[in-house]
Length: 270
Image (cartoon, rainbow, N blue to C red):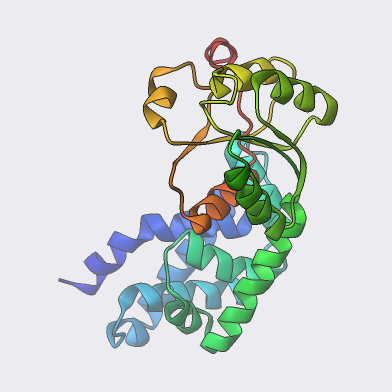
C-alpha cells in the first residue's frame, strides 16, 4: 500500500486529536494540514517508520509545538463535548497530550513515549499528573442508593479513593429522595431493587424532577434498566462489578459532565 494511502486512513483520527488538543476543529485541521505539508516536503521519517501512525502523530506534535495557537482550549461546544473541553482546558499541557493520546487515540504507554519523544517513565508521570488534575476538577458529592451494606461500603471506598465525598447512603426510595433534596449531589450511584421492594429507577426519576445530575445504575437486574423508564443519559454497570470499571465510569460520567434527565424531560427537550 502506498504511503499516502496508509496516512489517509489515519487522518480522520488525527483531526479528532487535533480538535481535542486545540479546542476547535478549525485549529485542529490547520495543524493537520501543516503536518501533511511537512510530510510532503520531507517524507523520510514517515517512509522509514516501523509504525506510520506513531510517526504521523509525532510529526503532528512537532508542527504544533513549533507554533502553538493556544495554550488552553477554548470552545463554544455544548453538552458532553463542552464538559470535556472545559476539563481539558484546565489541564497542564503535557499531561493533557499524554491523556488524549491514551484515552482518545488508544496508544499504550510505550507508543505515547514514542509520539512524545520521551521515556516511558515520563509518560507514567504525565498520566499520573493528568489523573490527579482530573480528580481535582471533577471531585464532587455522591449519593449512593444501595440496600446491601457491604456493597454500599465498597462503593463508598471506591469513590472516596477518587477524591469524592459520599454525602449519604440510602436504602429505600424515601431515604434516597430525602437525601437528594437535602444534599443535591453531583453524582448518583443507584441500585434498581431497593430494601423496601421499591425501584431505584423510580427514586432517581423523582430526584431528577428537581435537579439534574449524572446517574450510574449498578445492579444485578440489568433487564429492569432496559425495560423500565430509565433516565437519559445514564450508565449501567452489572453486578458483580469490577472495581476498576466503577472508577472508570464514574470518572467518565463526571469528565464529560453527562447530567441525566427524566426520560419524559429528555424527550421533550429534543
